Image (cartoon, rainbow, N blue to C red; front, side, top):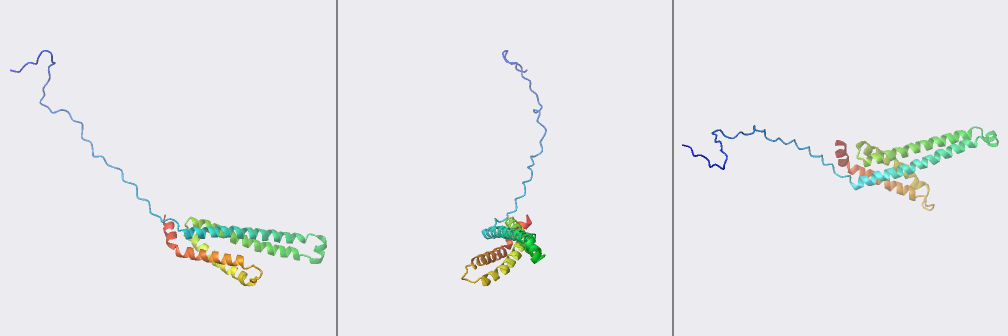
Length: 186
């Protein structure tokens, strides 16, 4: 005989089945971690200084080239005066064109230095090689200025400063090839 529940409690059902369980869930799969970023060394201070020197010198040389181009066009326009044209003929126009052409080459050289300096700061290997070549040319162009003006005139200061700056650029970019190799891989 089964005991009867007391009258104040509702009857309970007893069952021999286990309680219903939720269907089994697959184990939580974590998404793969993103790859670790490639450690690129910071730009060495010498590379920064060399890039900034190339930019500054490039801008100054390009401005000097623009002045030479304008001077050449001014000389060329002198031949338009009737009194000079009868005496000199086409000489002012030819000379002015020659000077303007030299100025255009100087502007192009300065612009190339500017661009290579910018890309040296960005870590491009081709800019490093270009900057070294331009600095070697700059050394060769500044050497006559050391010996041609003489120490008495004070004209040795700018060529000496350019020589020292270009030699620093050559040295700084030559010894920091690993930085450019690592920067080119990214």
